[in-house]
Image 1 (cartoon, rainbow, N blue to C red):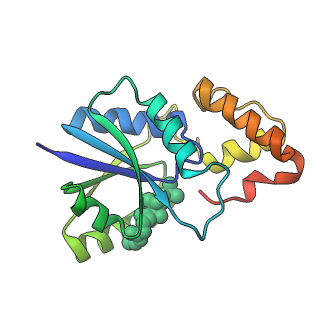
Image 2: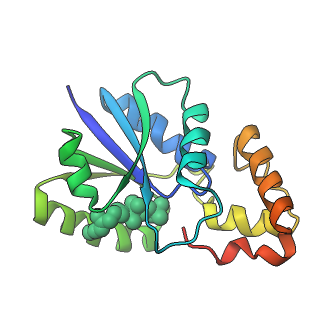
Length: 171
Ligand code: PNS
């Protein structure tokens, strides 16, 4: 049984993430989508909210489970008996950053990383841009599932979108 971990901030999940998760589910018997918890980072959505959105969006894939992790990703992979990390890469900037982490993760634990190139349709989609555009009143309906869009609109309305500067958040 081959189990992979698909980690990320998912703040919020986009169609780009879901494309990678769906393709990973075709390559592995089980995929554990793991929301990274980093208390030092500010997020628009709590880990619980990000997990709920992911579970709803991944409901069509029975072999995909969603949870969170904190601390070292490699320790989480080992605890999950997963020997592979799956990461989507959108371009050379992603590759440069992800390659170093993949090499470090492999050096310290032996856990391998598989890179999936973003589909052309989603290669420009990033949660940070979705937050920024939505926060400035733009239309992001093409980039996230409808339930995520509804939560995004509600959260930005709560915060007063023009003042929240959600694009300043990482991820
Ligand atoms: O979607 P993101 O923000 O690129 O996800 C980043 C995440 C959560 C995958 C990354 O921050 C991570 O792997 N965190 C775990 C901490 C860790 O293992 N650090 C060592 C990296 S070599």
